[in-house]
Image 1 (cartoon, rainbow, N blue to C red):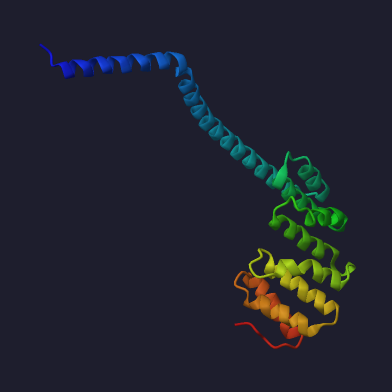
Image 2 (image 1 turned 90 degrees about the vertical axis):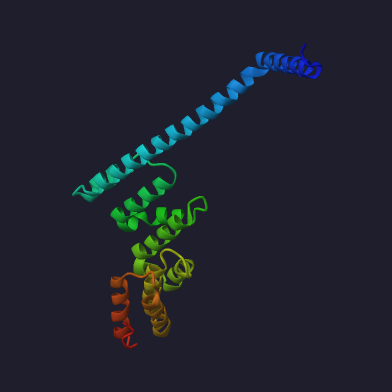
Length: 212
């Protein structure tokens, strides 16, 4: 004869199995749906990532093709026709500004003051604006625009320091200009060419050679 305890365990196990099957028949679609959603979500993310990569590559190719056109007006037309949105549109606008010069000042100013854009775009727009306007803008206004760009750690600090030095020269503040130029020479993020220009300007202003 079978052991009573073993028999009870077998019956209990059968009851559990029967209840599990009933639950699966009633609610199993939820588990299946959850699996489908998880798999579908992963596939969707992969598809979107692939689509984004393809779109970015196409946009990059379009930008390069536009910039290789010989005529400035044709370059602007080609850039304006690109299907760029979001941050990419900001980049295209900056490229267009580089082609049309002073006419881009209002749009650059709007970009520089747009809080929805990433900081590197607003700073680059502000820097481009100062360079385009040049001496057409008052030195004090240029310095005010450039000051946030020249803070330590900012991506365009070396270029901003150079422009601040030029603004101080226009304002007749030679000592302040030399201070900006020396900071530029010592900036590890500055290119060799930019440091050389700063060193030459230091000598021209009578500050001696700071070139190491």
